[in-house]
Length: 91
Image (cartoon, rainbow, N blue to C red; front, side, top):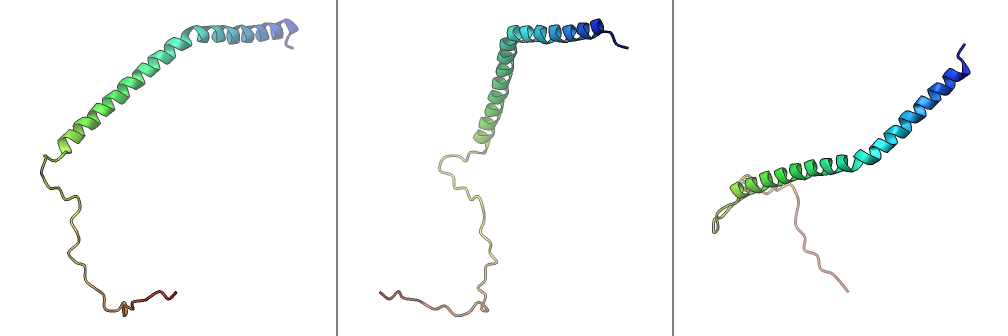
């Protein structure tokens, strides 16, 4: 059988750990948030620089004509579509 004092001791230990972590998080949370934000800022800055470098390489020279997509040469009219009828609006 579990004793009442053992139960109280367990509850007391749980409460001490809870409040101890709560106090420690108040002390260390600002440092942790500052560290994480600095790391994220560095990561985003690196990604931005890589993107800018890639854009500079792919940018055409001034005055150069660039065609992104070539049109298909195989366009033919289909005679099965039907006859075209021009409609006029009547007021």
